[in-house]
Image 1 (tube, protein in one colour):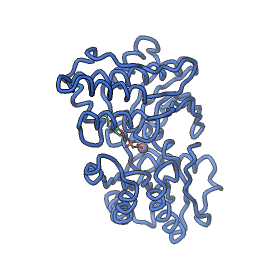
Image 2 (tube, helix red, strand yellow; image 1 turned 120 degrees about the horizontal axis):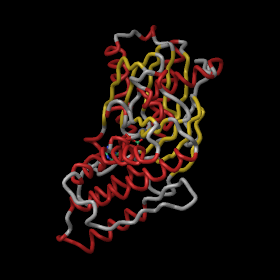
Image 3 (cartoon, protein in one colour; image 1 turned 90 degrees about the vertical axis):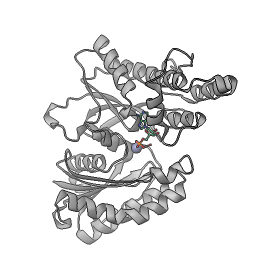
Image 4 (cartoon, protein in one colour; image 1 turned 90 degrees about the horizontal axis):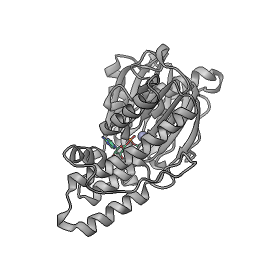
Length: 337
Ligand code: KG4
Ligand code: ZN
């Protein structure tokens, strides 16, 4: 089956064509990063307006790149939550209209479930084994999840304040680095000494929840105290190490407890090489037989529509009778799967 995926939950206008949930035929992303760099972060109204301008050309390009006509599309999958409401509406309205006009299957997708399905793209589905324990870590969300089968996903823990990506972005701002902060911090950290500054790790005993606001405040205090003596590379490395420690410790604990066959990283922060290395190290020590996956391409880590098309396909497979074009779908701020 061929699905057209549409993603407009935050600051990327994206459309993709995916075959059978995992073969990516096209993946088009119009990034708004340059626009939001001017304000140091996403301004929701600016993002929403940009989506309305970009959505149709992006969909046209996705069909063109895939060499697929609109008639050949079986279903449309679109992100409905969570995200910026005004941004989501552009994608959802477009999907509703296209589905109604073309009499297509229409599947609403949870953005976080989309990130989880990024790990299935360009992969041989027969090789993926459940249960999977993983992290979806982005600018807007930070979830530790257990996946027992397709679309059978439960959240084990989430952030109580900032998401990991948000912490990267805020710390980057404190250091005078541009948005988005994750890749910038990583770049500085490569040349830094991660043991130079001692930073807190909020491990929140007996819980799989996360908290990064204390770490962010500690960085803010250090920036003030050290002034011009601050070594930005060392601070970036120390901060990155603290985030990676917390994420990898919790992930490993959950993988052990739930007998995971696979451990996955997904979302923008899964692009972080230090995090991948830390998880790999810990797995080798404690759970050497567990398969470790992160998205097969960097472009599948951050927001994209291929992951949405993939998630939509698997949702449809579970309950095909549920997704007719005649029932328009709506956005929601709810986070459940
Ligand atoms: O998944 P995503 O594109 O958007 C959301 O759904 O939020 O994730 C974007 C986030 C940003 O906060 C960005 O700073 C972070 O992912 N990010 C990284 C890296 N690349 C992107 N964080 C740490 N290291 C990276 N290499
Ligand atoms: Zn995302």
